[in-house]
Length: 182
Image (cartoon, rainbow, N blue to C red):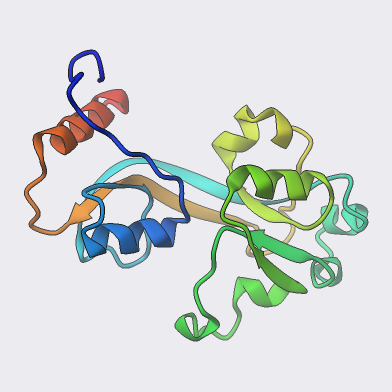
């Protein structure tokens, strides 16, 4: 992309998915890339791929054996390490995932979340691609014996509805579509 567009200035920022949405809505950035939320009516979207996030634990966790067997009581004794969670008031469902753990630690850095889980400090959700490709995730165990252990996500690009994209952003959308053969 750069070789064909050397004059293009690009800024890439890693942040929690919810923050990306707010940043695009505020007009601070033109284009967001990440998992779609349930309500994306304020955006034009370009779906790129689907993925799933899996609840994982490290063998170094003190409750590893119990968690590997899906014991809910063991999960209740450990923190969920997440990038960010909505306020509980925004998720008024009877049973929220956060309620299944002792507490929630919000850690925006993915690498730090992976490190903390690897050290046995808690559990987190990791996407299946990262589990397969990242060497620090190779030893993680997927906890698949609880009803909320997998979260399916659609990932793609999005921008505010009706916004005319710049040539640079349009070119990036085309690059992504070509990469994923869309």
